[in-house]
Image (cartoon, rainbow, N blue to C red; front, side):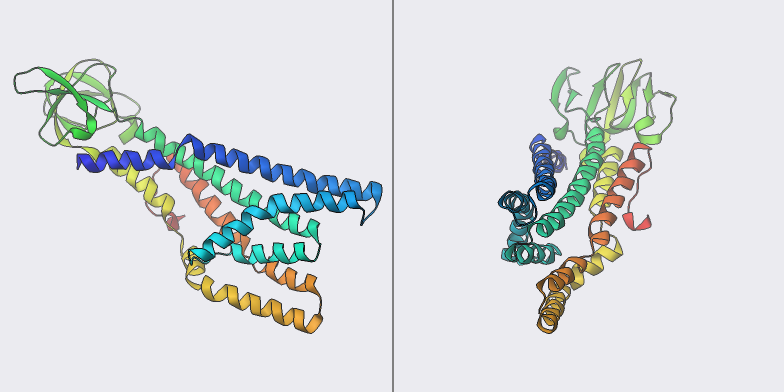
Length: 318
């Protein structure tokens, strides 16, 4: 179980690396740069008139900068045989670009990327709340050996039955029972109680809580993911990854939805002969309100709840 706790921490750390935040920042800069190119193409249109080289060149650069990530993501999904709604947007961008409607291609890509970046940034905020919980558990513990001496060990190596010693100011490394000592413990992170709780031998203590005044010898009863704090962390991560019913429906029928929309766009193109109408079908068929706005709202709600001390096991309850 200690080995699982170590992997648990490693998995979380891998998800929330500084590199991911850098990638999000770079994507935001790229999106804003593409948007500025589109705005400049509009200004150039007013100065030089429509159809001029400057106008079309700026719009084309903006469309390439904004559309490339979406198209590449759609291609990767097809290679992995994973259908997403991005395929429809990617096709709309390619069709608009092929017909030299660079502004249209850029605008469609800009709003799609901006929505995804907002969702990603909100998710990072929610994961920061999880990281703050993880940091409450110390990485080292003072293990009391059979001869009464202390040995510093990794918290991941603690097992039920071990005895650990915590001094004033230390965070308690595992759930356990006080066997010696008297102290006040701040349990606000677990129980929400704002006032410290006095602890005497025979009373329970929780991992991640703070020993305030005296020294405590604690017999470990639960360690790693089995602790109360570990279960709280697991619940938050589980809630973040849970999909609401409407999202599961979309995932289930996307392999039928996308070909159907392509067929409708083809029929419109066949009977009208206007590419712009077919592109419109591809754009409006992507349910952005469900794909982007709904997950963003869910992640934001989970993050806000966690900061208020309210933990949600299932986001569908929202």
